[in-house]
Image (tube, rainbow, N blue to C red; front, top):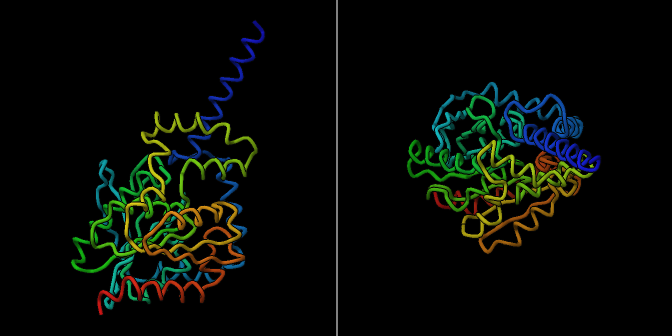
Amino acid sequence: MVFVYVIAGLAVIYLCVSFYMTKMLFFRSGVKSGPTKKLIKDLEVILEPYKEIRDEGMRWLSETDHEEVFITSDDGLKLKASVYENPDAKAVLIGFHGYRSGYENDFAGAGRFYYESGFTLIMPDHRAGGKSEGKYITFGIKESDDAVRWCEYAKERYKNVPVAAAGISMGAATVMMAADKYPDNVKMIIADCGFDDPADEISYAGNRSFRGAFLLLPCVMLMCRVFCGFRLRQKSSSRSLASSDLPLFIAHGKSDAIVPIEHAYKIKASRKAPTELFTVDDAGHGMSFLTDPDGYKTRLGKFFDSYLFNENK
């Protein structure tokens, strides 16, 4: 009988911890502490040497004229984006930020570069973030459907203007998972430090915070489906890209401890369509542009000339 009570107690603990992880990872409200908070603090430490550059970039995004626009997602959520209208634009770039972040933070480095390269910028808030509605973060599963809706919005507003879908971290996974559903105005994808499979990434990142976190994954995946309404293995970047001919530019730091560079290698290896992989030796997660801005601009600029701007010549 004691054995039965022990097993039952362990099962209850397992379920409680799994629900805690589920809420921490997917619920908009999150939790007040936990592994994700540790990851955010780790990123803040990594970003500290680039504070001046990032502050300048965030100031530019804040002070440059922009407007707020809204669309409705396929499942009825009101989604918000900021539009930076460029009077000399040759194309539109739609930029998707990372997990529990915002475009002001994640595009503080490259935002101005994109604008001055000839883009009008559309910068959405992901569902369950910023001014967009939603209760659950879905690691690109439903966000990729939202990305398609934003590209359709751009097609309606900017007729015959080519679009680049860009993202950082979870935003990068988002734009890759949407690759097989984009409207025909989308001409290329830019994925900076994106992951391939959401479940694999959650298992890896969770295990970095405390050993054995991967043991919770089966229960977390079940709770994710029951409470949040989606399956973690419903989509992956490589599977969606497999049926897409869109050119893909991948940027990834070789020192990325949150999304290992192996994700980038796997995605590139799975493609037959034009794919450029730009790696930076000493760059951590989301740090490639800040670590090697000249290299990033040069390689991406050539990619623009080859697959985007050449259509307007």
